[in-house]
Amino acid sequence: MALPADRHLTGSGPPGADDPARGRLFWAALVVGWAVIAYGIAGGLDNARDTQPTEIVRWFLGAAVVHDGLLAPAVLLTGFAVARLLPAPLRGPVQGGLIVSAVVVLFSLPLVRGYGVRPDNPTVVFRDYGPALLTVLAVVWVITAVVTVLSYHRSRRPSTVPPPTMTSGTSGK
Amino acid sequence: MNLPWPERARVGPFRDGAFPSPLHDQRVAAILGVALGVAFATCFATGVVSHLIQHPPGWFTWPARPAGLYRITQGLHVATGIAAVPLLLGKLWTVYPKLYAWPPVRNLSHALERLSLLLLVGGALFMLFTGVANIDQWYPWPFFFPAGHYWGAWVTIGSLIVHVGAKAPVTRRALFGGTRLADLAADGHDGRGAGLTRRGFLGALAAAAGVLTLTTAGQTVAPLRRLTLLSPRRPGIGPQGLPVNKSAGAAGVLDAAWDPAYHLEVAGAVDRPLRLSLGDLRSFPQHEAVLPIACVEGWSASARWRGARLRDVLERAGARSDAEVRVESLQPRGRYRASDVTHVHARDADTLLALELNGEPLHIDHGYPVRLIGPNRPGVLQTKWLSRLTVT
Image (cartoon, rainbow over all chains, first blue to last red; front, side, top):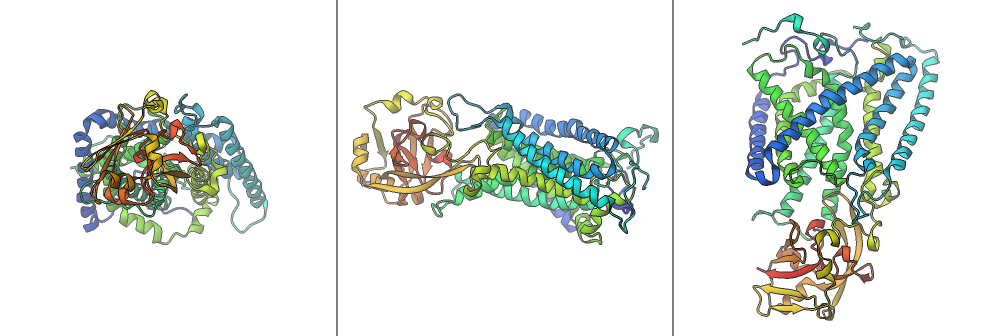
């Protein structure tokens, strides 16, 4: 079962391939949305002492650049490594475990590093988060291991669906 | 106008078929898009409510009841934002190939669309990053967090509205156009690499959202308290069993708060200005109320407060029955050294000038000698170390 080509987001289809019809909703949302954006920009400039507009712009763009330039390529390389190193039945569950782990690690990094620690207020960032993070990751990988075993057994059972192939890449296109 | 882009410049990720994974798929993008739309709308609505409570325009009145409403709206704001982290990262991964669209710019309207997407992607990441860092009390940026988060929210939600208008038809087609959820599980069997299926991908993102929620929501949802492994706060941890946001030391009030000559001034539009010592405040009928501290940072904890009713003190001073009150702290400076109490809150039987917390005199970090506590007010407006009430 191949995916319909126009459903796959290659970002390169023929011009307009996934452009929807530009109906009333499109134009209404365009006008309302840009009015709201303009309100936000005007408010930000109006309160420049608090918002420091050049800094906000830097952090807006910086967030996109760090994601698109560092985080996404790192995910890409990890996915590539998983596909190269692991037998096919293990790949899916391990990728799932890695996704959950990466999200949990990213989220808790400021806590683990203790960026918000205040000597005068031990009630915020109140514990040592390293062991807490390891506990959560341990649970995630126990569940991942169970899912992996189940999926491995399922893949060895005879089935009407053709078995997964070991090839990776574009062979199915 | 179509720009001439040389085909031989089309290298690396710009090549056709550079992203063969089945996860870069319209249906996955549509499902995650709808979930994120709901999450961001929830965050925006609850965030604007929180902003209006703290900076009320003339037309806005926030009720005093139900007493725990703000802990729900703000708890929802923070919990939804946290759960949106894996959804956003998953969505950006799904549509990542579109960053390398070829040609990069087709025409003016295409360029404008990509510009608004830059606002949306940058804005969504900015909102979630600044929000998460703020609950961790980590401020790596120079701007004032509430101002940046608030005005950034308008830009982000505006670009989201543009995006929804542009993508509604394609989303509808992807969701209801024939593919079933079962098809999303079949990816491993079509020779595309036998990695995670689309359904598996969505499942992993949902699991990530679930893990983050389970390990943080206990900071406001009491039954989950024991699971708060990754939350920056835990109700029950702090002096007198309650977390603290600003300590007396950090506020610079230690000397003034311990001063035996302490008194509370009541002035402004009153018949009889008052100068109340701690003993005077204890001579008012003492009233007890169980009220939450509900922080803008998404944690909340109930406690038993005891002290004089604000309305009794206002009555003694001869204030009008619809009086509003500006409440000031001993804190010499800082944005949150004062707060305003609307007449709705000032009249409420549970709005107290609290002297005790959970049966003991207030801990200095909870506002000794006296703090304001009222139903349904954000924590930053429950002013500590009171020095003066000005009636208007």
